[in-house]
Image (cartoon, rainbow, N blue to C red):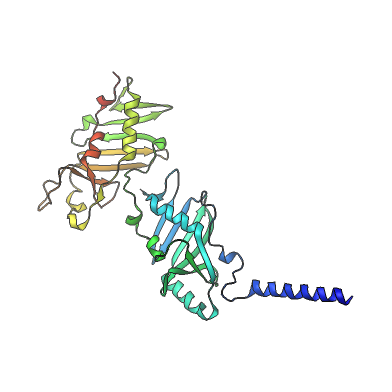
Length: 324
């Protein structure tokens, strides 16, 4: 009997040690769902939202590509870095008791809030901020919790906030149109100075419809149309105009564009880019490079620069798509 009592005592001690380790608040012991910041499988994520100092940046994936603030294609490199971050967030330990108040105070003052969703369901929501004395590490806390942790990003020995800008311009890709070819219901090319040249290409079941005014062309070259749509889909900005370019929206907003491309997607929403050959009739207007064109995307007030050599193949007329 004494022999069994000895074993029972040993088991009781071991159980006590395990419970102490589980519930102790000292660094190195992490328990419960409050520390489950990492998302192992990011394939089903449809929305990521960052909020910092009142500035909101949202990534969403309504179809095959990621979109910034429901307006622009997002940079693939930043999206990939974000998804990797969500998978590799390495929690080192709980914040020591003597540092908890300081960590929570700092988190309340300058944290970045991260919300990750899948099909309108929140997967995780937390806040984190860099530790001033160790910028590659962070204090992190689950939203609604009072228990902060110390974490770092595996493989990145750089300040964490450099990976997560909330500036829309930093996230915006140079791709002009976000609608993939498969989702294009219509692509139109307008010449405001010569409206008789305007035409549109629409999808009609598994084929295309070429229309100019009220006239629908029957003899069309499907390959030429497919190439045209692909060129529209691949159109990219050379760069965004900056203050150093001295090109302001006010100097071109009243000008008549040379051409305009309109794309309608399966949600019946429109994307447009207006293109200007030169800035004219504007006092003290800057000289423009003849190899570049100016563009205004949608309702933007920031002009973009396009390489003429990239845009010129898009300056088509209806006759370019007629069958031989």
